[in-house]
Structures are given as structure tokens and as C-alpha cells.
Image 1 (cartoon, one colour):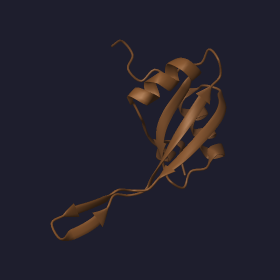
Image 2 (cartoon, rainbow, N blue to C red):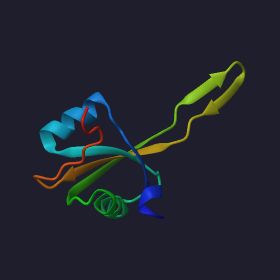
Image 3 (cartoon, helix red, strand yellow):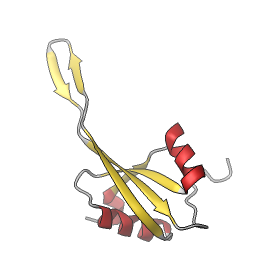
Image 4 (cartoon, one colour):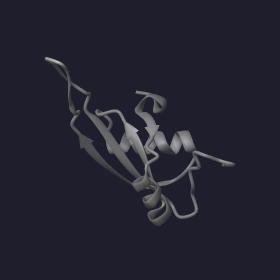
Length: 95
């Protein structure tokens, strides 16, 4: 799988902003089948930074109902990527 297809989007949340400021980490939503080595290569290729560590967390999709019909949201995966000191990834430049 290509680097563009592996990383779905950055997760810009309050917790993600805090870990970015304190530990120089960036949080991404990635494909559920992605492993840590592939995530490391994808981030290094896309953003031209050096990755120190990758931690992942799997999440089950929530159950949703529309009247009598029950369904499920898809399962998803989150990756916390720690960058080398001095490296930055800016998603909102000039804001």
C-alpha cells in the first residue's frame, strides 16, 4: 500500500494538540491493517521528518441504530508518531 493510502488523516483534537506541544507527537488516523514500520516509512516519506517512535491504538466501531435497523461504524486505528527533537509537522500554517 502506498504512503498516501496508509495515512487517512491527521487527528486534530484537544488531546492531540497537548501531546504535540509536550512530547513532539503527531496523531494520525491510519488504516486498520497498517503496522508500525509501514506507518513510520509513510510519515517519513510524506512529511520529510525523522520518526523516533510509533504507538498505535485500535478502536472498535460504534453500534448505530436507525429505528429497528442496527448497524456498525467501521473499526479504526490511531497512531501516535513521536518526532525527532527539532522536527515539526504543521497542518495549519499561517493561522
